[in-house]
Length: 333
Image 1 (cartoon, rainbow, N blue to C red):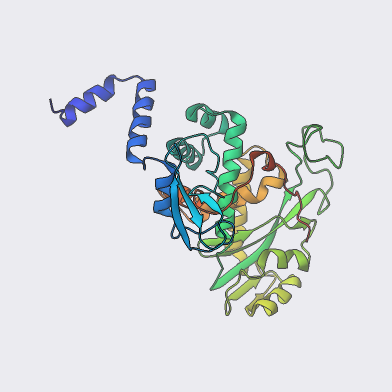
Image 2: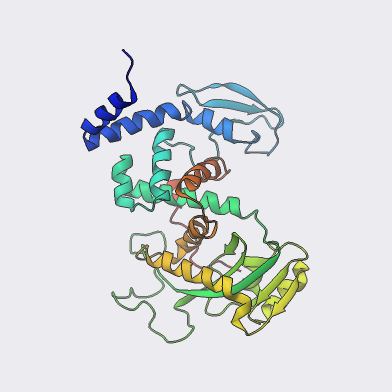
């Protein structure tokens, strides 16, 4: 018996919420590749050995779950399609990761995401930063060109998540709820985030405490500016060194007209961070990347859902979940 469109719509209207969610899960698993190995093989431009980086590899059978194994003819090391990706050693099928990305793209809170994906809250948090770490590594290859605007913005230093049982030690007594910055002006209670923007591309990283030094600006901008570009800044001396070393033309002025786009970017970034209700400084770089993906690149939800898996699932970056919180709060420059 063939069902018409009206029959299907009538059936869907009679389904409960739980029934519809189960149906969506079933359809997702049918529309996606049958396994993780197939997806990774389709979306990787080239299979290379994670040990030596060479592409002289051959297939070496499959696991019980269908994961394709390879062996490198140059170094002799064996690996699988998921080796050194965030999907390595994941016990969840690909459609669960896809559902998680959908929740992430729509800005769903972690607790709701964990419930919808049938994972624990700590797992949802770890997955978020595994994905953002991979995207951040992918975006490191982008260079800014044309007219580039650069300036710094500041955020309150936050040790959120660091406590007596954490791997990181608190360097001070914890603050009570209230104002997170207790000193006026720039101080060691604020982190400097140098940013640069050009069109729909942007870079920004936590660099130091207080005002940005020349070393902090180099940490963020060196090798990220295309030769012959124009760098517009507000006149900080360190930018002159950056312009000379990267062979770009420097336009500096105290007039805000030169840096109106970067100021707008800072405003959107701060509003985005405020909406997250508290971000630990050690995770701030990841949320800067997330803000760039959603707001600066003006991606639709569908485009974000399509681009995040293609980037995050295939970028060679893997670390055990226990190491996700073990990152520097302020980089050693």
